Structure formats: structure tokens, C-alpha cells
Length: 117
Image (cartoon, rainbow, N blue to C red; front, top):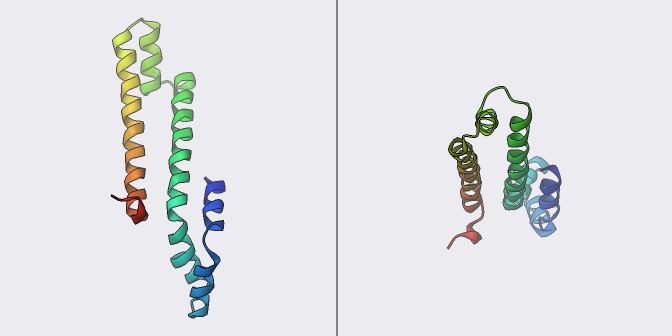
């Protein structure tokens, strides 16, 4: 996440920053209103990538070491050969991941008008 944020901030055209500074904007105002707004699509894309890795790690950790939760339920169902419950748990995890990704995609569409249409 930090790497993609820094990369997105580095890709902001210097002309935008220089124009804002020339028009009298302070460094803080330039950072908040020009650089971050310009880098927001890249930052949100990094958030989507990080969320996918984080979601996978959470599910894996819950499958290995949890004493409650969906991963624990899947492991218990697997131990008792309850295939339907295992698949129901996997589908629930997939749906939750898709909802999180759809939310971040929606934010990306709001932040970057060029992706609309």
C-alpha cells in the first residue's frame, strides 16, 4: 500500500504542482488539494491490490489458528465431512471479498472520472 501510494504521488505531473505553487498555494495545500487528488486513482488501485492480499491472509490465518468464525466453521465442517457447509463457507468468503472489491471499485469510479462510461 505504501509503495503504490508513493508511486502514485511520484507520477503526479510536476506542472500541476508548480502551477499551484505559482498561484500562491502553500505546500500543505498543494499536497492535499493537488497532489493527493491527482494521485487518488493510483492510491485506490493500490488499496484494491492490498485488500486482496490482506483478505487472503486473514482467511488463511483464520483457517489455521481460529477458535471461532467462518474459517473455523469451514475447518470443523471439513473434519466432519460436511461438504455442503464447507462450500457454503467458501462462497460466503468469496461474496464478502467481492463486496469489498466492488466498494473500492466504486470509490475508484468516483475519484477518477476518466474511468466512467
